Image 1 (cartoon, rainbow, N blue to C red):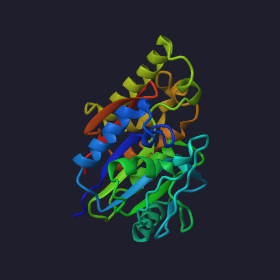
Image 2 (image 1 turned 60 degrees about the vertical axis):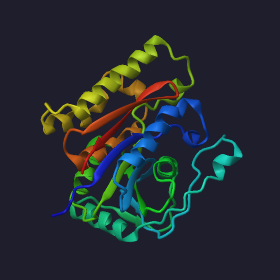
Image 3 (image 1 turned 90 degrees about the vertical axis):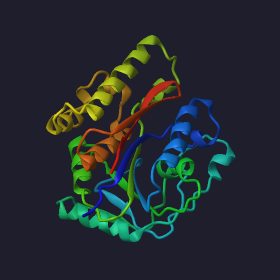
Image 4 (image 1 turned 180 degrees about the vertical axis):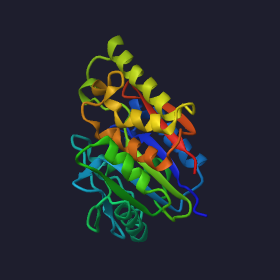
Length: 267
């Protein structure tokens, strides 16, 4: 019998800032370090990153992917970060086959490296960089239902002790991060977080109701204020599509002054 993977959605913070000692990321850093110690060490990790979009779901397939420093305006040390984890071409091929079996055209990419949606949180969770990793892109349609379907297609992956991480952000309004954090802004942020918490954790919801809420996430309170563009929320849709049930645990962190969520489904 195939064991279901552990599934984790994280709010990964701003670029490399969690690794640079930024005080606005202290709670997130503590959570990620704690999670690395609490979870059973995985044999492989699949990361769905908010920072990679393609016309079809695309999977890194190289044996030793380089790092992509896909941020700008940071001090030199941000571009010297190393995380030399190996790739896992066999797992990449299995993900490719699972997607295509579900009728979702996909593609393997043996050249692309790992972006900061992978290496920043994993450097905190698993600093030894000894766990094979692959990345899966979003689809540039940014269609919520399509990303739920991608998650469903990944059910039954035959990889013992797999960890799947959706690396996004439950609040991602860049302008609001650097504007005054007024009571109105805080209330909007909190209202959406409360909706997301209920959607992901309320065991009283039917799964059809939970999927419907996520498919139409933009009807949630202040949804488009919290996500003017939804690429940082959609890794959560893939995570839920894979897990197919209420999450087992939720953590919150104040990141750059905004309430942000982490959701975990135990395999």
